[in-house]
Image 1 (tube, one colour):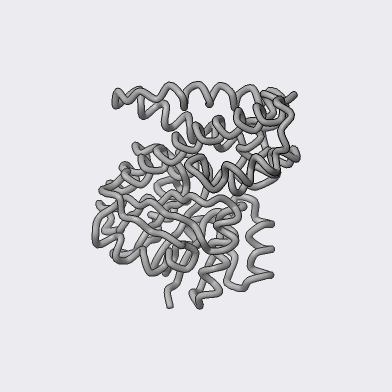
Image 2 (cartoon, rainbow, N blue to C red):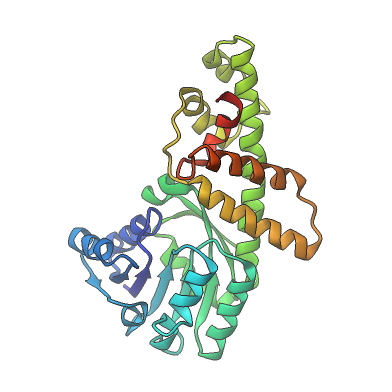
Length: 288
C-alpha cells in the first residue's frame, strides 16, 4: 500500500481521500482550514499535517483537490509547497479544475525535480466522489499514468489518459462546455412544458427514453421541477470553469458562443443569490 499525502478536503477531496484510506493506503492530510483535516483524521485515521510540505514528507504520492490556479501553485511550488519535500520518483496527481497553463507549468517544475505529474480533473460531482464513481480525464506521460491509475481506481468508475501535460484540463473544459448547453436546453424544455400546462411527470416519462435523454435530464428534471438546487456543484464553480474555457478559446481561436451565453446566464443566477446553488438552478432565470 502507498503512503499518500492528500491536499484539500472539500466536498470532493474528503470522500476521495476516504476511499483511499478504505483501500488500505496510509494518508497524511492537509486542508487550508485545519479543523477539517483534524476532523477527517478523527473519522478515518491517518495523520494531520500543518502544511502541504509537511504532508509530502516521505510520501509516495501527493494527491490534491483544491480550488484555483493560485491554490495549485501555492501547494506545489510555493514556500510551503509539496515539491519542497517530494522525493525523486514520487507522484503528484492534481484533481483541481484549473487552466492548462498551470498544469503544464507544474508538470515542467515537477520534471526538473524528478517528479511524475498528472493533471486529472474529475466529473461526476459530489455524488460521484461519495460513491467512488468519478470520471477522470488525465494529462501526463505514460509513466506518470502507470503510477497514478492504480491509486485513482479507488474512487473512479472511468479513467482516460487523454494526452500530454494539460490535456486533462482541456478535456474538462470540453466537459463543462457540453454541460452548459445541456442544462440550458433542459431548463428551457422544462419551462416550456410547465408554461404549456403539461403534466411534467408524464413529459419526463415520454422524452427521457428517447434522443433527448441525458444524465442531466435523468438526474435533475424532477428536482428542477420541484425547485430543489442543493446537489453539490455550485454555480460559482461552474462560472470559474467556464471562464477557463472561454480564456482558452480566446487563445486557441475556438468559437463557443453558447458557452459564453450560458456563462452570462449563470451570472444572472449569481445576482439572484444562487452562487452556492447547483448548476441546475439555471432554470430560475426563466421561472422567477
